Image (tube, rainbow, N blue to C red; front, side, top):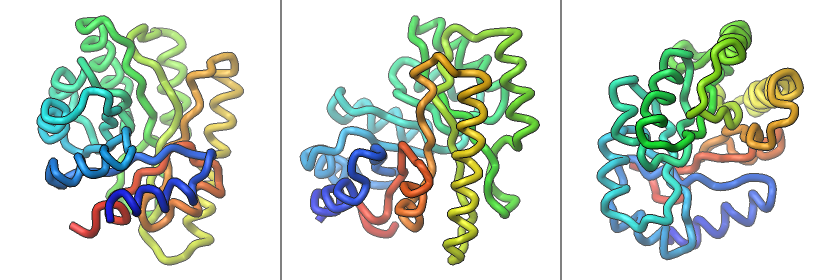
Length: 219
């Protein structure tokens, strides 16, 4: 079923976005099945679980950390992580930069934007985002690559509200791209949309969607 689920979602996504299989809490056998079905990008929430799975599974997998990252945990994933999604402070970027330097690799990161109506989700508001980008302009971090923006919509049944939140993130991405990353091809990712709302996210311009339960089943 896992392979069939992946193929079905990839058909819906088409060429517009890449699928991140959110594999948190799932056993290795399930990830192996997804891998055999052609999936190569996996997303994990917790550093310890990410490291364990990285060590156990094939090395051509692209691992994305999609959960909230604490500064003291960066060193464990810096040698191999393909992208860190939830970056919401300059201090965390400094830490990622320091660990990138130690490993002699540039680490792609997405800046997490607060787009939902719920207070529980992390993220920068537009003012904080611009302030962080100005800081980066003044004090560049050579081992960090800002690859785009990430956001999580409100967990509501109102499709219009969710679409508007995604639209807002896309508009912000466009503004930031033209002001700060106009000549940088690497600033291209909009990570938004999960199992319940990824078709709406695709319509609004997502380039990465994070899907778990529709691939692996409910927890």
